Image (cartoon, rainbow over all chains, first blue to last red; front, side, top):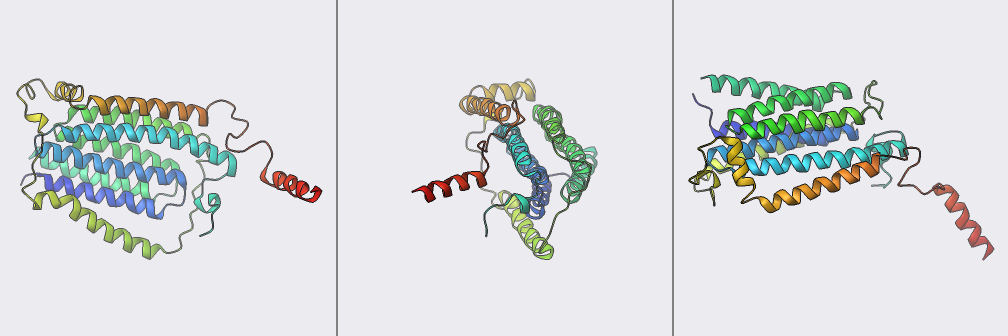
Length: 101
Length: 196
């Protein structure tokens, strides 16, 4: 038995769906951020696996840029979370929501 | 053989840890399991021969991002459990399961379509592969991906400035609100209307 790219892709799909389920069911903004991090990591695994499969370094490059995007997303997002928390005193989406719909 | 064992150990531990992240009610548990799961994810990168990516994952994600989350949690109340109101849990699980199926098929599709090939296989060039992963990454990053690299640098700078402005000094008043609250502004508008 050997670990092929299929294994990695299926694992990446499973991890991505875990993150997606978190995004769907979370109501707390901080927990929502954690779920997006899970999704980004799942995609990184898929990039690295496919890059390894084709003998191409581009997969790793894309994973690097995904990590850079994730880092800046966290910096800006946490700043916004702090501003929101100061304004509303809560991070619950039901409390923060101002639009009806 | 060791690769198989390592893959399954990492796979099971990441899945379980990320499930805890998604399901836990305690912010602290969620964050700790997310950090542990990211360490395990870097194990996959080492298995796949992407040593540099694994180290970057450890340093950036586990070191920087999780430390940032830990600092941010000092502003929030992390000790008490998060209360979340769920209206249709069964619907969410149904939709999540369906989308999981779709995504697994999507991610496995490149194997079914065997005719997909890398357009410009940068890893197969002559000089690559002789030195090791970190040198190869450097060669490719500073030739083919130089412009995206610089753009990413500018993006990180912008994000840093945004983070400093949003969460930095002047913590005692909010940047998104003007000094008067909305109700006071409405009262002033009503007064002006009455005078006219």
